[in-house]
Amino acid sequence: MPGRPSASRRTVLRGVALTPVAGLGLAACGPGGDGASASATPTGPVELGAESEIPKGGAKLYRDHNVVVGRDGNGTLKAFSTICTHAGCPINKLQGTTLACPCHGSEFDATTGKVVRSPATEPLHELPVRADNGTIVAGPGA
Image 1 (cartoon, rainbow, N blue to C red):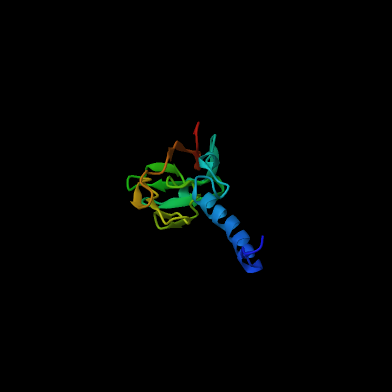
Image 2 (image 1 turned 60 degrees about the horizontal axis):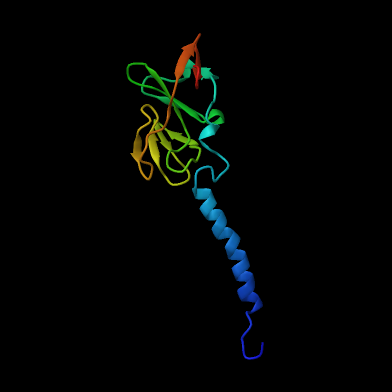
């Protein structure tokens, strides 16, 4: 149409380039946005490793199963899902007994599952755990 300016090629390309990126950013922040979900935790008992690997007051992260096992000062084992309760991201970093979520920075105590740094407000989901002939077994039915 005469008298109506047309969009430049640069304006059109910029709009096309930014639209998918904005959509991806939002999807990555929601539960399971990175391909993981709460169902990524064990759905049955899984053998994790030697009970002797976890000292009193310590913890060990089992990334392949999205589980952390901690041992309190009394020697009691506790296991938790390492799927962050804030946005469903798998937690992949353990420093001492602090789990750090890579998505938004939430931190959890690996021996209690409690939130120690927001944005998460809910503790990690506790899983059944037991030692079977020196091997740690965690997950439903453990």
